Amino acid sequence: MSLDKILSIAGKPGLFQMVTQTRGGFVAVSLVDGKKVTVNLKSNVSVLSEIAIYTLQEEMPLIEVFKKISEKEMGAKTAVSHKADKLDLEGYFFGVMPNYDEDRVYASDIKKVIQWYNILQENKLLDFSAEALEASSNKGVDKGAAASGKMTTPKGNVKQAGPKASSAAKGGGKTSKAAVKK
Image (cartoon, rainbow, N blue to C red; front, side):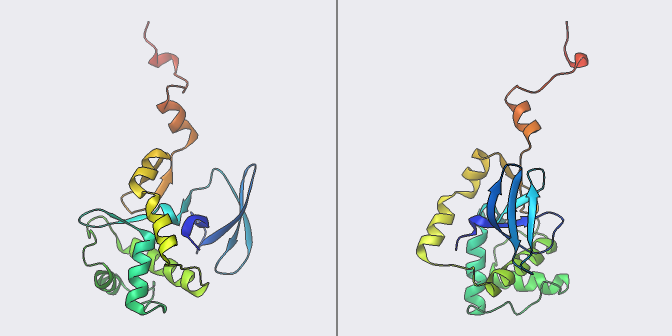
């Protein structure tokens, strides 16, 4: 399965798989405990297929990072826990991606990547077939993020531009009387 329907929801631990969309948001199932949750459109949600990790040359899609981890671990869970200390996490990640940008990828990001990999591996949702990798790389993390109103934060997270930001950018936002000069 590709990462298109796998979500990270701010304020909720673990990962979620989107089941269906509703008028006011969507229904998702936790990959950790199997509980269903409803999420409204105002929640900060990141789709894993839209997340990339900064390297010294370019941004690497998360599926490619997961593939490198899987190759290192031969398809098993990671040798290091996401609860390990900062130096252990950075040392492990350096072994997986020696060219990651240490200034823009924080220990908290590495924790998330390791935790997410282990959750996906445990649920047998990692698919490194040629079709899945091509589909995720064709999304174009940079192009897709710019075109869809998403931006990559310094920590590698992707955030959706809110309705206020997009309407203001189009010139459709309301202006206050103080801002209008006569």
